[in-house]
Length: 213
Length: 242
Image (cartoon, chains in turn green, orange):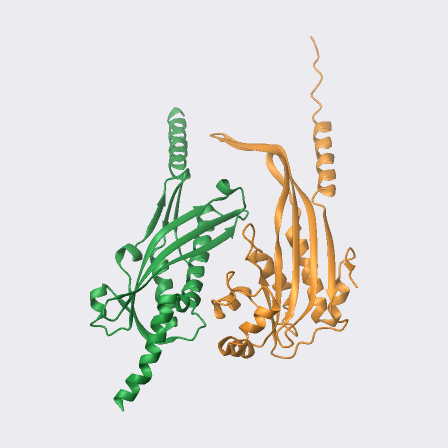
């Protein structure tokens, strides 16, 4: 009788301790799926350099509540998708050095600059908010810098009954990544340095064509 | 020998039962007010192969129109016969990135400029999207009272207490005709309701379906814009604007 009671008590204590240990931390793996962009592709070959710091990116926050968000895989999927829609030809490169051999017109190296979260207990709003700031370094085929574009994206999701914090953060981050896709698809051509580069290429094209003849 | 009177437990149970019955009868009450504005008195024309999309507005910072609310209206409208509704997420994915919160047109002028792009216009035409219904608003908890607590032990667990909360749902739907590039009407719905949770051992919830009633109200009215026989379903509380 006593043994049964001890077993039950030990079991309950273990459950409570494990709940206390895991209860205060939030672990999220972003699982978003991103559609193709309905845009006119630019007539260039782009090389996308996605290094390990980007493809395995994990955000960690120790403020008030421990949050770990793995978004490397999801953002890699988004960038692959968007750049293949934005350009007629796109390749994924391991390093910038391989750009010359791949005969690309532009090389893009994205980095995650910053990730910020706002939880309902901080803002007193019923929304989970996520900001992701990227730095996109753009180089030409010779490896010379063309632009350094700081781009931020925002996503939010409303708190719902019976929805876990993990689920809410996953949705908010997916929304932020979708927004990053919007910024890339619409804003890339509008960056002054990139617009100038495109204009220059457009001017060179007829000259090159007449030179061929 | 002293004779003890047996504890009269039945009156306690019966009064609890009466209280619960009264509570269940009076609780969960909701009230709905619907305002409607129509450009014309005739029903909106929708040809074979033409479809409607119900979209939620998500540009505001402090709230977003709930996707499940949009889905609920879509289910109300999609009769499978004359009225065909394209799911919101499907539309958003097909037209990505043009209807994302950052890019979605807030006014018809912006929408017509968007349709100047052949890629978008051709897709709209190919999919037969005739009307976009923009729904803006949300459901929020306006007041919370009372408290209850639950405890669990080796021998079992239970809850004790009483809590109540009020919810308010405010939504406005605006119908855009993409063929005429014109606004065809508006429906505004306001639903309020109170929910209760009584916990004596097991928690007994009395939940007011505030969002559900708002969906029913707005869905019925929107259906009335498109289908002639749907106008009879309109709730009695509604009032019409000239």
